[in-house]
Length: 210
Figure 1 (cartoon, rainbow, N blue to C red):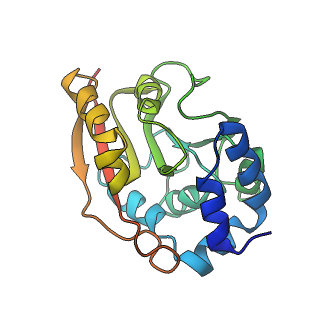
Figure 2 (cartoon, one colour):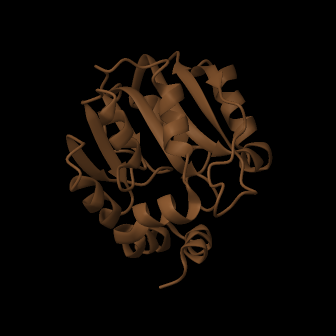
C-alpha cells in the first residue's frame, strides 16, 4: 500500500461514497499509527478542548465520522461515557470497537438521511470529516435534526473549504433560518503539521435553536 502521505491524497481523491468507504476500510488497521507518526494529527484534541467548554460530561454524544475512535479516546479520558459512533467505513468502526469506548456503532454516511430519531443527542462532534472529498455542507441539516434544542454541534473544517467550498454560505444560511447560532470558533491552526503543514483548520461550535 502507499506511503501514508499518499494514502491521504488517495482518500481525498475518492469520487463516490462507496470508493471513500472502501479506501478507509483498507487503511483502517494502520490509520492511528500513520496519523500519529507521520502527520502529528492534532484536530481531535483541538476539537475536544473546545467541545468541553460547551458540553457536560453527562451528555449523550454522537461522534459523527468516528473513524477509529481517536476523538472518543480523548472524550473518555475526560469522563464522557455516553458516546455513540457512526462512520461510513465498517473497517474503521471495527477498529473503534476494539477500544471499548462507545455504546453503539452505526454505519451511515454524512450527507444522507441518518437513521436516528429527531432530538436523539445532546451534542455531536465531528472531526476530520468536513474536508476534501468528504461530507458536504448539507450534511449539517441531519445533524441539527438529531440534536436537541439547546445542544451543540462541534466540528473541524478546513479553512479553504469554509471560504470556497460553499460552507460559509450554508452555515450562515442555517443561522439566518433560526436553526442554530454560532457559539465559538477557534483560531486557525495546523492539524497536520508534519505531513501537510499547508493545511489549516478551525473548530466551530454551534448551538441548536430549533
